[in-house]
Structures are given as structure tokens and as C-alpha cells.
Length: 90
View (cartoon, rainbow, N blue to C red):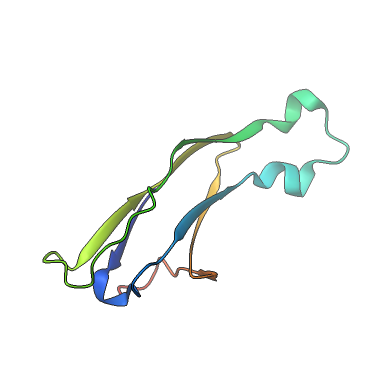
């Protein structure tokens, strides 16, 4: 999953994390055989801790995250202890 942020919305240093939840176990973990529980998440790619200058010429940054799990993981992005709204253009 790739996330774009406008650089003007980053405050000096923003530590952004990608969280992939293993929803099957959280919902159905009890009373299910070990074989049927699935696996994961196994992170294959995570964002690198980087400082992006506010005066960047492109005006945006790209952060990548990729995880494997069964069932498919649900991704959430967090910045400065808050959830990032991926539906917003801002």
C-alpha cells in the first residue's frame, strides 16, 4: 500500500507508521483450529524513517508498506499519534 502526503502538512519531523492488522484472529481466533487461523502479518516492506523538508519541490512524499497475511491484512497509517485519513486529498 502506498500513501501520499502533501509536504506542507508535515511538521518538521513526522514519524509515520504502517499497521497491518491480522483481523481473522482478532475476530475468530477463539474456537478455531491452529490450521484454520491463517498467518501473519509478515511485513515485506516498511517506510524508512526520513525527514522530508517542507520546501520540497514536488510538494508530496511517498511512503510504502507491504505485508502478507491470511486473510489479507487491513492497513492503517498513523502520524503524530493520530490516524491518517486516506480518503482526503489533503
